[in-house]
Length: 236
Image 1: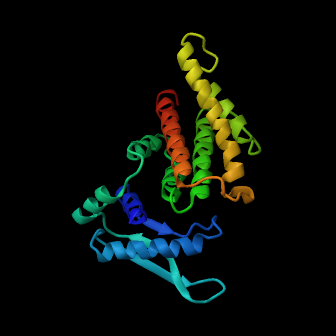
Image 2: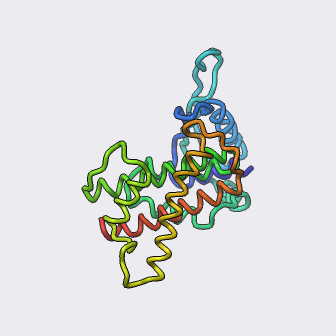
Image 3: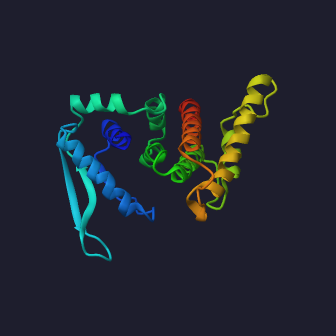
């Protein structure tokens, strides 16, 4: 039920097309499950309308869902179902709105992907959280016309962002804020290492985290991305 609620939340946020995540080796199978949930949601009249697309699947030749086009918004029963079943970060919608300052569909989708993977794919949620922050870093540097290389790692990008936004890591005027942001700096560095060891990228097995850990990591990453969005909206 919770996964269906997450999909309905995406529709409420304006998403009109669901399709296979081809970057995920298991994307085909996962999408079949999500497509089934979306079709069930329409049958229950949670959504006003949608158009499923089926095509032959590579290897088997059998028909499978490749996309779901949403043609109508949530109904009142859909909104009611959403409010009753989606127990998520209470600030998730606010973070989604904050990220709009970057005018990037990829960034918005990364946040939704991180939220959506928390329970069913904890290691994937960590990877998506890391990708969210990395995309935010690059977007800020592009907007501020700060050069960076495609080979710059996560830590290098973060140092450039903290400097260009003058986040106070070297400011002695507010010692408590400096200490807090210093802790954030350490946390960001830990996220990069945790993603490499526990995420699903680079062959990570994801065996050291469960959905509780991934929820914490995703929520913290989202909150920090929202913080950077707020700072950027003033300084970009």
